[in-house]
Figure 1: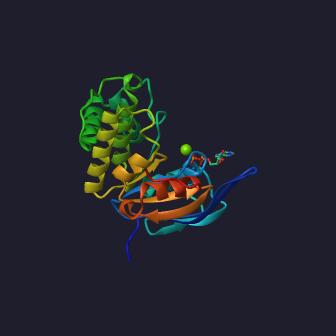
Figure 2: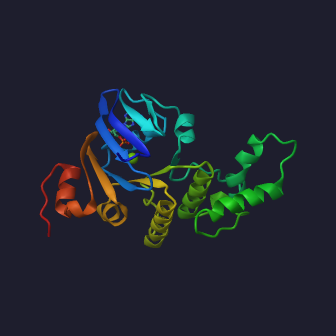
Figure 3: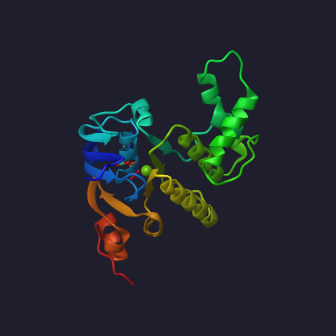
Length: 246
Ligand code: ADP
Ligand code: MG
């Protein structure tokens, strides 16, 4: 039996009047690049919030790290290896790259004074975990969205992440930045870290995923390998409408 990094079973979640999730099942293997595909409003972000402990599900379970949760706190999600990379707001714009990477750990250590030298070493080590170069003294607010994401990924790796979740990370990226992000996702894979890559863009899903799950109206439609589905069938599963493949 495959040991999953996460298994989500039969998750349901309703908001006043809206059944956002209606029986979602999803398994991700260690190091797997798994895409969660679905149109706007299909429930992707809600599922991520359930997996990361932001929302408690009404039904279903989340298996993480050998434990089964019927609801999960954000701390439990993080301490069991789940990290979410948000578009912009997970980094502090007025702090430098170094501070964003190393200040939490430095403060958590409860030392009598803050050592900037130690923080620089911690930040350098964090950045070295992914293959990119950046000025540690730059204010994060001055960085591009792509650079901010990379800082957030470095920071996520400091806490021993097993699964990195990216919710529509390419929305504000250029093609070149998307390529750089994909290279980093492959690099994470090489080190056994799984990615859940959320997207509504067919091209991206086919380019980066090893396996994908399509959801529609809060329901899992299909989980398969890219080579198992042609583009027209993919679009059909996403939208529920028929498409001509030409
Ligand atoms: P996606 O990320 O796939 O675009 P969402 O998970 O954001 O979809 O939304 C799924 C459905 O749940 C939508 O109909 C959305 O309006 C609804 N929804 C999401 N969050 C809330 C909320 N906090 N309160 C009420 N409805 C919500
Ligand atoms: Mg969303």
